Image 1 (tube, helix red, strand yellow):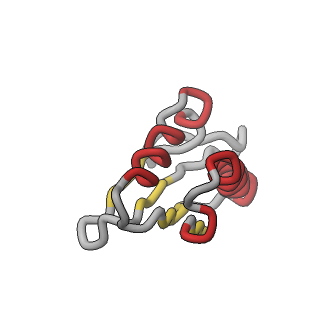
Image 2 (cartoon, helix red, strand yellow):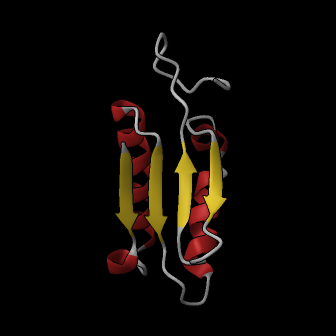
Image 3 (cartoon, helix red, strand yellow):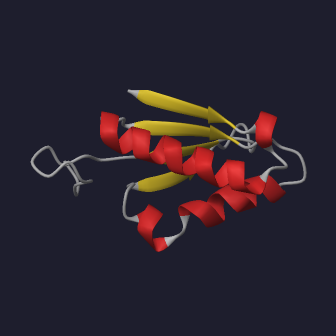
Length: 94
């Protein structure tokens, strides 16, 4: 399962961005999604940096496996998850 979050509509509302990011990460964990696509858009790059700072927070970072920057579209990020079936938390390797 893949989830998607497009931040174009709320790009200038900091608290809403944080809530939207936390919401999509929590939803991915709950639904055991394998990936979340986050679209901060191209613009100046400030929103992408904000998203990366959010994802780099210790309590958020422990919820996902890795972040991938799209090589073809620098206005898009992929957050990958690995879920451990017994605990519901992310697991190590397969």
